[in-house]
Image 1 (cartoon, rainbow over the protein chains, first blue to last red):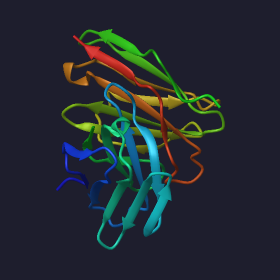
Image 2: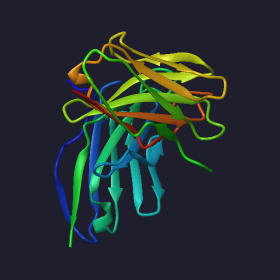
Image 3: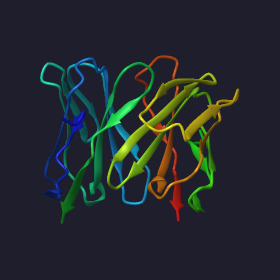
Image 4: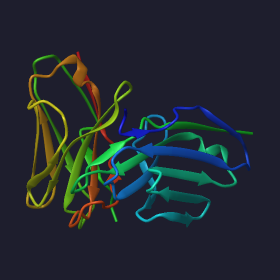
Length: 111
Length: 114
């Protein structure tokens, strides 16, 4: 079982729709959770961090965390073609700043 | 505030050689983590340095090593290069005093081993 799992996609949504990206993790002791966006040929860019159960909103992005279900999600409202990228879920495991990444979900926002 | 910088951006080496990559973190950040990204394995953690000490280590062979200097700049070294070491090497910078900090990635060094 992979430590952090994501559906590889591609996930296709029409422009203006809500994109929902999901991630599950196996280490119950994980305390920090992050979403990164990576455009082709570029490095990952931090979008959201979340540490407590519930929702965290930042502009068009909402991260949701459910530690009991070991589940993290990212909602992107009013999706734009510029949101087309690979979205990486990362989980902080152990001490320090070690991140374990999922394989990423490719999102395509279609006109 | 300047972001994370990595040098060089591209490298071509041959099997058996060694390579050193450099990373300068965001000003004020004391933790530097290194990751390897390949199409087959995705993003994998190599190691983390904080205050010149290795704080975490991933599951990579001893050919991969690193260090951090007093100004928080970090280097990683790969000795006896193998074809499978071809990858994008990313460093990430964070405040780092406690764990679980937000990490910000540099542009990466693309290493090709021939």
